[in-house]
Length: 351
Image (cartoon, rainbow, N blue to C red; front, side, top):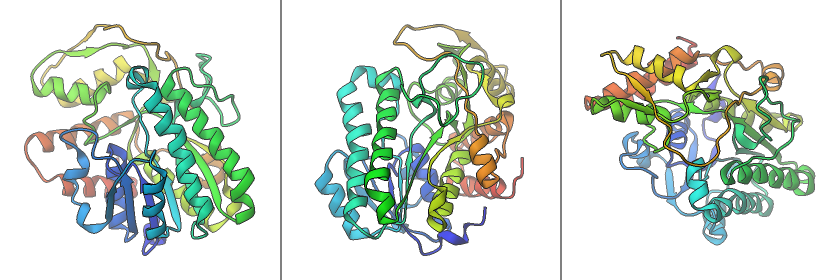
């Protein structure tokens, strides 16, 4: 996990104002990258991007990935060597409310950024960040592998399946001959400090306990590959670096926890309540809503065997660091110092 590779590298990051994007900005800026971000305004209020003190240390462009002309101008001005595409409409329930916007962002946004890569000869490494939900969900008890069928059910998942196909097409038709390394990474559900989104279980837990309310859990028996946000982010950096150095590493990579840490939502909330303390309780209360998968796990054998990658924090570690961040935030503590300390511990492989 030597970050010296990133010093002075020109990096273009879409979706930099989101939860994962803000953490990745902090990592890359600390590593000395010349970072340009392109995204909409931060999606929540409050939001981590405004807290993590990166805006003055990077070029932050507010724009929509659906606007190809605006994106192309920003891209040609930064002339990046490495592109990490994370901009997306990421909420399953929101995709049912506005499927057109979801497809425009997640599919055509991918087309637009790949067009920028195709039309500029500066890029050596491109990574499209998708999701574990790209797979046709058969409710199997074993993890999905990268060669399993892509066929997400809901508009969000399906649009990300389409994004995978678009990326594969551009890689095969354009990027390979141009010497550009193009890959995708399919990560599981992430938790961590600074996520203020609606319809995500840990942010809901934090909001409830901060108000001394009972936590409402709508799908306590659904099993998901929960992992701390730093796990996939460092995997993205690893893939981007390795394929930059050797184009033979291009492909698709699952990123998720070990099987023992794939837990039900109810178990996750139990762990949260235990670590938070204070005797907080949760209630099983399905509030209705659209279809969501019940059982979902990833087989991460490929990234493990290719790069020697493995998860560093188990599910209890991940929740503990998330709770630590949330309590410091609620006490008006030093957010940046907390982020840097957690990043340092992760790099040192300290639980």
